[in-house]
Length: 114
Image (cartoon, rainbow, N blue to C red; front, side):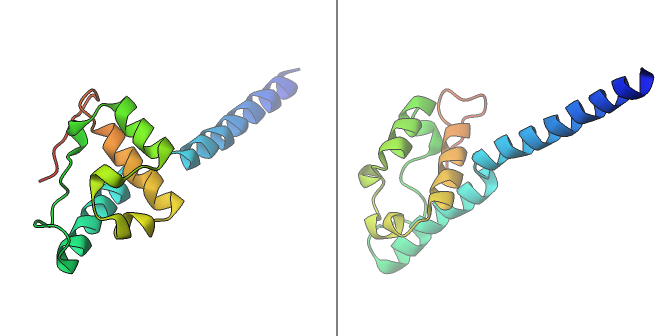
């Protein structure tokens, strides 16, 4: 009886670990997103399309819902640097979205690009 109970508990714990790691894969990497977001504008600035190498829109310029709408519609026209945005992979976009949403105006830790 005790052995069966222990086997069930171990199975539940192992299942929980696998489920947690599967959900973690769905979320982007916030640090990578911040790096990629800034890199877009550095590249765009070097090309001469924008005047500064910092992003024109800070994460706290929009709410989480607004960032989600932009990401779901893949409408980055307001962001400028169309050429750079069009080259990004889905993973890069997810990482950027994770960064922007985590630091949106209504997030627990709003942030400005500096």
